[in-house]
Structures are given as C-alpha cells and as structure tokens.
Picture 1 (cartoon, rainbow, N blue to C red):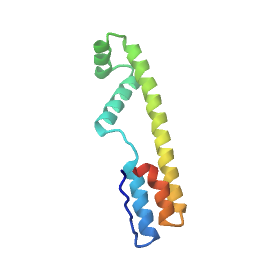
Picture 2 (picture 1 turned 30 degrees about the vertical axis):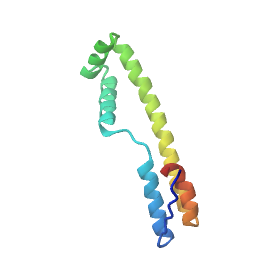
Picture 3 (picture 1 turned 45 degrees about the vertical axis):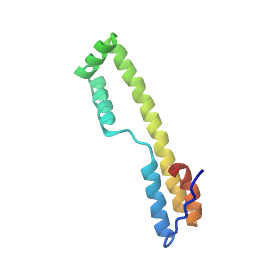
Length: 114
C-alpha cells in the first residue's frame, strides 16, 4: 500500500524550487566511471586505434574495425538516449515554472519522483 505524503510549501517560489530540484535529482544519469570509459573509447575510435579498443578486440576475438563499428553504434544510441532524457527534463522543468500552484507542480513532477 502506498503512503500518502502531504507537503506544504511556504509559497509558490519555494514549491517551484523544490520540484525543479526533484526533477533534476530524479533524472537518470550515467555513472561517472562508465561515462569516462565511454569517452576514452570514443577518443580511441576517433584516433582509429588505442589500447582499450585493442584489448576489447582481443577479448572478443574480433577485428579492431568490428570494435570501432560497435562503439560508434553504441555512441549514437547513448547520444540519442541522453538527448531524450534531457528533453524530458527540460520540458518538465518548463511546465513546473509555468504552473500556478504547488499541486499542479506536484502533478507534473510526480512521474519523476515515484
């Protein structure tokens, strides 16, 4: 069973700040170590070679070009996914800023905070 929580905000500005921060906190993000690894691989792809790509090709028993193609395709997907997440976050925050009441802000932020 869900618990009902009631939040009372001193005024509209306090509510807005609360819900804007809630959306930011709830937006999925890539952990820093994974992001760094992705960027290192991408730098090697752009250079056309590198120790990480070579190690991956060796570990997978495939060619360097296959690894480069795989990283390139994955990068494209990561960028598309990140763009969609960022657009949704920006859209939610814009709607919160336009909301007249804390209740309306809560309704907008609810999918992010559940």
